[in-house]
Image (cartoon, rainbow, N blue to C red; front, side, top):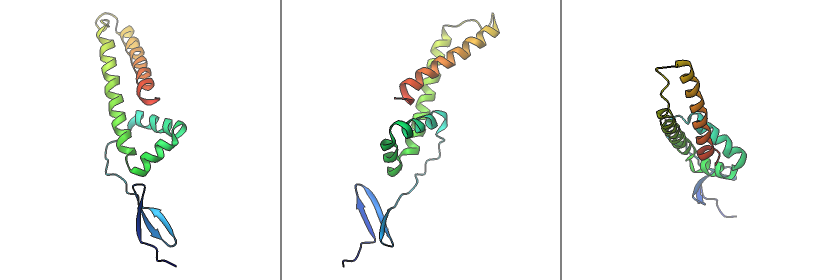
Length: 121
C-alpha cells in the first residue's frame, strides 16, 4: 500500500492528514471589523437561500470580510438615502414632533431600499 502524503491541495484548499482522513486546513482571517446588523441579515439570507455561496465563502476564509464590507456599504447607502430624503423636510424648527415622526418614516423607507437592493438580492 502506498504511503499517504501529510499535506495535499485540492480545489484550492489545503488538507492535512489526520489518521486515515484528510481534513481541510482552515485558518480564520484576521478581520477585526464587526459584521453588524446588515452583515448578520445577509448571512442569514445566504444560509437560507444560497447555502453553497455561504459555504464557499466560509471555506475560502472570506466570509467575515465579505459581510463586514457589505455592512459598511449598506450603512453608507442608508445614511446617503436618509440625508437626501431629509433635505426635502424643513419641519424641525416649526413642529418638532412631526419632524421626529417623519425622520422615523424616512429611516424605515431608506432601510427598506437598502434591504431590497443589497441584503436580499
